[in-house]
Picture 1 (cartoon, one colour):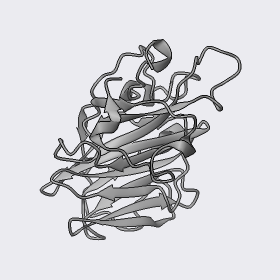
Picture 2 (picture 1 turned 180 degrees about the vertical axis):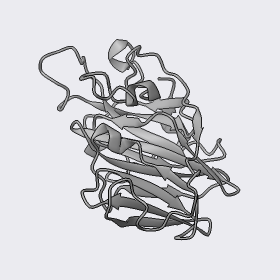
Picture 3 (picture 1 turned 45 degrees about the vertical axis):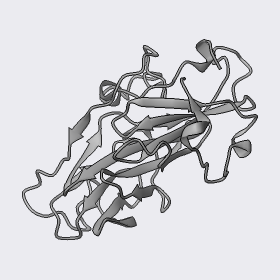
Length: 235
């Protein structure tokens, strides 16, 4: 899996999010420079003058679309009626800790399956949805009641993005992003190309990659891809 076709996809920069009106500015999990860069968490946007309830969406009306319990803390995904903007409310209806969804700025439509969370020493939640034939997701991490969002989203062009405990070496879960291995400059596209999984720490730093598989369905444990440390090698 060596060569530029295997070059790791990194995370999309926040500067790209601010320039989404420029067509083609986003390259999924591939950065424009194609150089892997660690994503730095940003502070949770919790500066509302009063606690934000169910009606606290940018576009009214809105409702709780999905929820999860993380180490006894309630995490709710609020979405507007069209599910094209949303917020994570952490700590219940009276909480003032609210984090804006950023994947919706990419055009992702939220669904009832858009929220998954894993509780560890460093807990994480993933807000994801369909994006350009694959999947884009935003990771929010929390420890001791303090939550923040990574500045850059993850993208899988093969349509599989998940939180998992893979290596057991990190304090939090890892992000598994499955990618097609192919020449993306070719006209034939990548839909039928072999796939491999990138494993990232929830800081955004790439950990390692798997070998290639003939298809997503051929990966261990599919449809819930199950990986372990021995499955990984340098990307």
